[in-house]
Length: 354
Image (cartoon, rainbow, N blue to C red; front, side):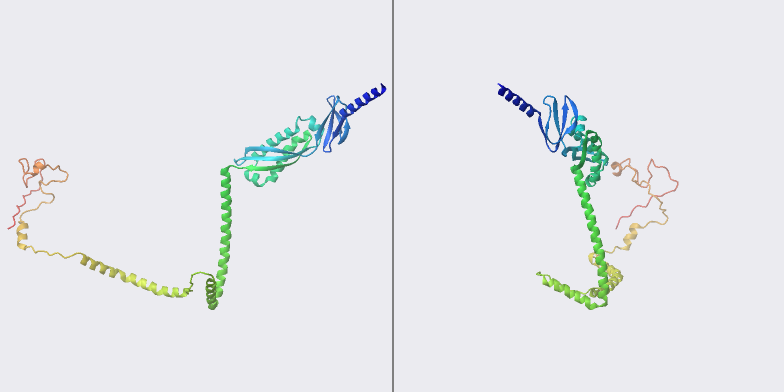
């Protein structure tokens, strides 16, 4: 009977020990809540005991936590829409503050990181987001760490991971970079041309003193071309010979310019004579012309239009031209016309040809 009682007591003690035994890992710290009240001491790593049913042990990790921040879309100070994501590295330095002051310190740090990232996007320009990230990382770290100190959390590092730009902005930046590189290439090419021109000028001065050097240079060029397998034949031709032939040519052009006018006139006259043939003209007897167009000397020829002439402004009626009863006679003024002061006589009738 006594043995059974002892075994029962040992079994109860063993169960109690199993219920009260706790193990705290090396990277953790333990907080004991006795009847809902936080005890002052922290449970260090290793084996520890609590009162089952009265105490509650809560473990807090002291490791550095890697918290990815979701991509946040915002507008920069120079009005460019971007999407930026980041990552936050933080750890708990005061387990009691992290458990008592904030409900969930991980969620709190995540929300603070998102709002700080939006704020830093609006205060920065696009060039700073792309090239000056170190400064932005420091500013973002200060913005997150300021409220997190009260929660027993310290932020070790904040890094901006990626900056997503619109496709139009990417194409514009690519064109800008291409134009910049093209400008640099042209400047370098211009500097090379300037240096080469200076060297060529010095070489020309040196060769002008010794004409044999120019001939040797020509022979070297011919030899270099002949070494290649091609069908090109190079014949060096002196430039001085072209200048020598240029003088007589200009003189011939000036001479042709002076006498060209006379020769061209002669040619045009000869061509006009050859192109237009001469037609025979029959002579008209002078007696016939005199008998047909003679006018007595005492007849005064009035100036201006003849009486009864049809002006372009008058309406022409076909009935009057047929010589009807209403048509006015030759030499008599029209009925509606105003009388003139000058006395006019009718022209003599035209004599028929014999």
